[in-house]
Image (tube, rainbow, N blue to C red; front, side, top):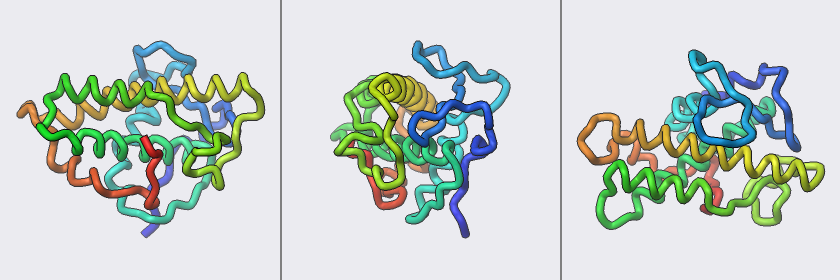
Length: 180
């Protein structure tokens, strides 16, 4: 059974930096990301929907630039769950939100950097301006993804993260980690 690919691979108006798509997102966080239609699902929704199914796969055939963004975001969700799972006491929703927001804005490697885990599959940005744009775009998307992940983790109102999500904290998509 093949992995699930991004529906945004057919999105033709997307700007690309390197060979990664810059897709619109629904967010109130300031940044360079184009605004998406609030009624439609965006790449962040798609990442959260496909995370658990795709994290079971060790191989992933990249079919377009949106798949490259999806891979980076799935690996970030995996790092977020690992971060929440390593805390001694189970964090509440507010504490988890603060932890993941800090993780999302921490310095991280982008394609083309020497310590980026997936450089074999990505083309780095062409120049410094593109690299800065990609870093700020990914920071904005990571912040939005962290906020929406916390909403899903604590959706039941019990004050504890969902065991159905936390079961994936040790799973590694493609046996990789972003190293956050």
